[in-house]
Image (cartoon, rainbow, N blue to C red):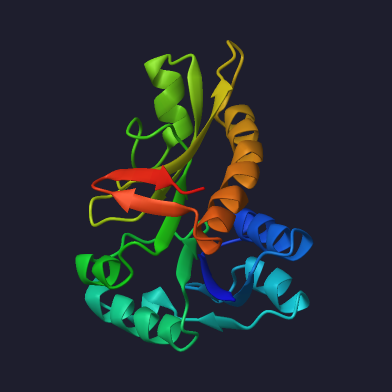
Length: 201
């Protein structure tokens, strides 16, 4: 039975998608905890309502990123996770933290990486005039929004799209591919060869 720890900063809609898939699809895993860096993250209420342990490590209480990451790592490791899932966790993580969870920390980014890293990805896509946009599940590395790609989903960009309309269609795909990728990990179907993710039968 694999243990999953999910990190959130807000409502955690991807967290909810992972939790529901884990339960409904009867994964060989349990959501050990949902941890936030903000006390008012509404996703904490959802997790608690599902009987999942929650915790908060308030990022604003730390003057240095390294100190926050050390405290967060300590809290995460209390739950002995096999995988750490970033679900709208709005922090840039330090190299030491990333190294500690190397090969067992996933993130979902709202673009077709390696295009449009960082924030405001939907605005970046619209400004670039791309015809396809989407989302990417990837392993976390020290380089922001890089790392071996596990899954991607593309959506068409319409002429009348706004950031909000495009974001909504991308989010719908995120809720499909992220749980699927996490399940593949917990079922041992993923391996990393160099910088490439391979899928095991």
